[in-house]
Image (cartoon, rainbow, N blue to C red; front, side, top):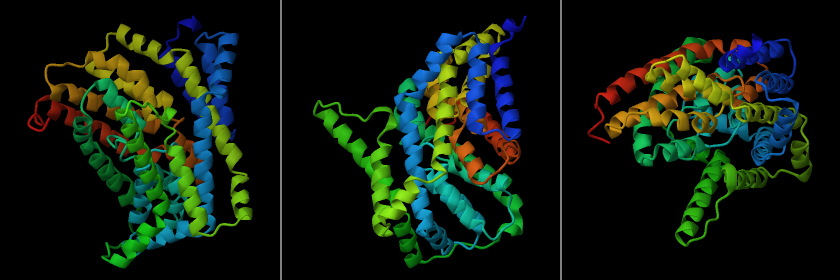
Amino acid sequence: MITEIPVLAKTLVVFFMVLALNKARLKLSTCLFAGAVVLGAWVGMGMYPLAKSLASNLVHFDTIKLAVVVGLILVISRLMKESGQMDRIVSRFGDLTRDPRMVGAAMPALIGLLPMPGGALFSAPMVETAFCHTTLSGEKKTIVNYWFRHIWEYWWPLYPGVVLAVGLLQVEIWQFMLVMMPMTGVTVLAGLFFILRPMGKQAGTGGIVRNEKALQAFIWEIMPIVVVVVVIAAVAATTMTLRTMGINAVLPGGSAILPGLLAAMIWVVWVNRISLRQLWKALAGRELLPMILLVVSIMLFKGIMTDSHAVYHIRDELVSYQFPLIWIVMLMPFLSGLVTGIAIGFVGTSFPLVIPLFPVTSPVEYLSYACLAYTFGYMGMMLSPVHLCFLVTKDYFKASLFHSYRPIALPVITVLVSAWLYFMLLKNGVAGLFL
């Protein structure tokens, strides 16, 4: 019977449906909304629970917050681009290296230090400028921006997914950071070898140039990014200080990024002498509404996945199929990342289910399973068709969603295989002296 189809199979069918509809040139926001409705109905939510889930997630704080954050990113990005600051950033970094590939990879990596949803929008115009004299396809530019934007989130402590993982694992944050840092190195090497190297001479060649004035000029131009980081750190320090005084004043749901973005926008307006007319033009830009609708559709889809308990059903199905422990530890986070498209999503949905399965014979073995689970969840997130950074980058470069997956296949496989080998090394106590 059709009702006996596993939830895992239903979820995969809906994913492919979304991809197929998008390939048929329907707006991705429409495809995702249709996918949410179909999946909710298919897993038996019923008309009223389905409508209630859609309505509640539409007005949910996280949905509104994401829409505001992405909107601010778009406005700041447009102001920086139209004022010439984007070009100046790329130009100043270009004074430090003659290789456009280095510029194209370094810009999203730099932006990746900021824990902002859809932050790839910040670096996409910089990548476009870096490769403006090449014949690279939109798909290749998409992957350069997307891959190098996500080299830090394995361990960078400003990311909510890392904070949540550390909290659920109940380990010291320095231990988690120390274990996860090598995965950033693997990700960078995979990107250099499989993404940048094949571009060859088309993207130019050259080395690093030592120039203190050029470095100072570059730092000045990236001050909007520095401002965001400084404000986030200041907010975190303030809340921690207040907590020691018995005052619990924490901005909810990762909203600490909002003051930083507002401060960055003020900086951009002030330094570039943006007029009120230019500011209004950026706030009323025609690209804002489609992107906000896309964010809302993603949150509705994710909400249906949560409210329908699809991830839990998938967990139960894997257990009933008598999968080995190690496969459950890898597959649950991977599928959760594929479903949610966000780090805090796969950590929040899968870690409470898989952590109780981790052996606790030693801290190193325990952390080895944590590293394996997080990395597989992260790669699932990187492959997710509802990953916000992937979607907004693809839309920015007008690239094909289907064909954008091709350049990322080998880097993802490399990271997964490396994670497995690293797990085996950790499990056998190689890092025992350090943890």
